[in-house]
Image (cartoon, rainbow, N blue to C red; front, side, top):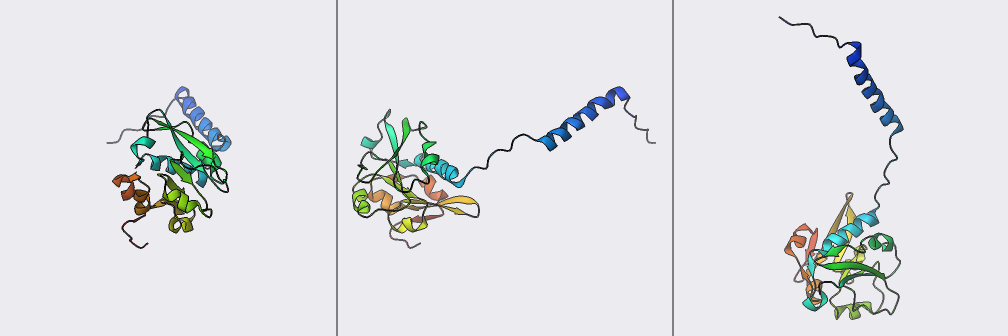
Length: 188
């Protein structure tokens, strides 16, 4: 035997109606929509995460000193990378600097490049500087890490041989996340 469902009294219905009206108003009025996060901001965040998995020679990682993230070139990523300033990695505070032509690279831990100016490749070969780019052609021109957008995701390739030649240690955890790792002359 089924019992009839009781109908709520008027005093019980008004909170439900008020709640429905409030939800409808919020749905129609809605809060200001958040601005979509641009690819540059996402790439900058990936750069920050990459820094956690790269180690420089001991003399370059002195606690309390800055971790120099340098940019050179067109400056498309400068604003997004500047957002990393002040964050810490292994007791090193990230400092972001825009370099001009001829500025010394020796203090840089990471150099973000859209293109490789003539003569810079030979200069970088002597330094423990992680070279990162988001231009595909740069992977064959000296970038150790190349960021790309693929199917709406940011992926990266690692030139492990180039990083090791520069005296950098790249964590195996990072290598497992890479789309492609160039190692011991392996072809892409």
